[in-house]
Length: 240
Image 1 (cartoon, rainbow, N blue to C red):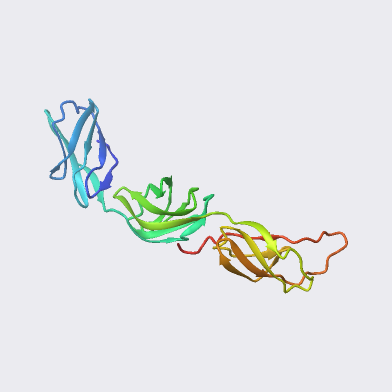
Image 2: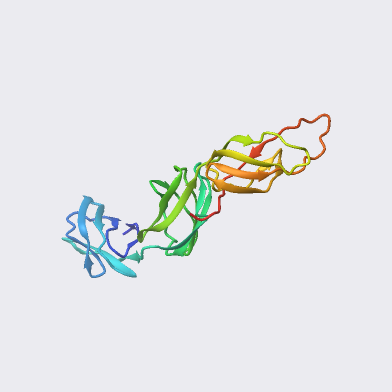
């Protein structure tokens, strides 16, 4: 007599399907000594029922006018507990591999980042990984759903891609040492500034302004083209 799923929340509420012959006229379904609710005869070979609360492993039996079936094991699973999430931020485009540590995670089926969900990879009962889905800039709650229920309490922050609109001054000596101000948007989590491909020391002034110091320009071969370019990348590891 198969039962699906064979595990569910210790807090009750798991809808299970029992398949077998001779199920017409089912009068009761029991999980151990407790009666299931919402028992429905779907067909002569299938019954559905909602599990009561419980703990550990119990036997599920079906009672019809012809008698009571042999017990089939059902396992109660506690709600997951989450301890940490890393990294706690990433790009709005998604794709960041996020590791969630806790307990009771071995039956995780989905992870929600706000309104968007993703399917996790089970590493162990204490750890899962998941690729963050795309999302709007800002912080969202993260919840994990397992056979034991859903738990939340962690936060993930989506960081918008930076833009650089102006560089002041726009030129300086090849010896470097020129302090330039880069104006743009979403610059708070800037982790690198390069000038013509060379890393430059920098200081974040605000979400719209970064100060950097140019490095000496290396000799340029006649066949190459000189030019200044500023690149910035949002940090993908800073906590919210």
